Image (cartoon, rainbow, N blue to C red):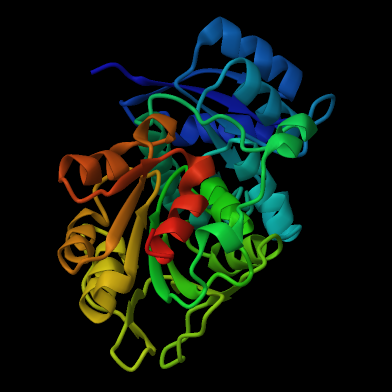
Length: 351
């Protein structure tokens, strides 16, 4: 099997050397080069054709944000951000990289704390292998002004029966955060239902992720709380390491049950709950990701009379999750990322 070719981009020679050393005994990964700023990185991507790039953000001459934006437009390659500043500056800084096209973010290790470096090495190897499997990088989700101006807002009155209630579940993984943000930003604030989100995301990111989503959505985006009564116009994001479900009293339940297909929270667990409790008023949405979390649960929604929407696999960073849902025959609509919100509204209105 061919080795994964990695390019390391960081203005610190110490960090570049450290990452290379941490990966030196991993036979499946080959560090083919390094760069100390964005301009050098762009040149080396063309020369070395790496399978994946690790990217710092704060660098001289051309920072990580501008570098990611350029790469996604001109020569896409999967990017793993490794930056300490991302965690100290808050969620806007963190998720800007994701919007521009980065697939994942890791916190740069404290070089003075050698006890944590072995754990960082394991996480780094896992993420490199996972992202290298994507095969291609995403297109940047940041639109030009002209593109944004041409988009028409959803006509709520013509497409939505406002007396209808809907219970929407979303399973999202690698490559999906920017798409999820776009969906929530497009849905109207008077959407007559509620949305439940299971996002596979790195440990420690959930609360920042929620604030990031809430900033541009007319809906209220909150972290799900056990026993909370479900409210319309609200998006409930699963807590870290807890399954998110609902009960017949329209209250939220959180459990620490076994992982499902390796995940907790799991899209399967959420979808099965929505299908059993809300039947034909349930809507399942499966977005970009690797594996098949959510596929079995979507089958429960389908059998209960609910509807299922899959992100078009050809417009996914990692197409496995939606592709397997389509192959399983549980999908009612395959939609381009820009059209998913409109499809949710149509199904919610029974049209």
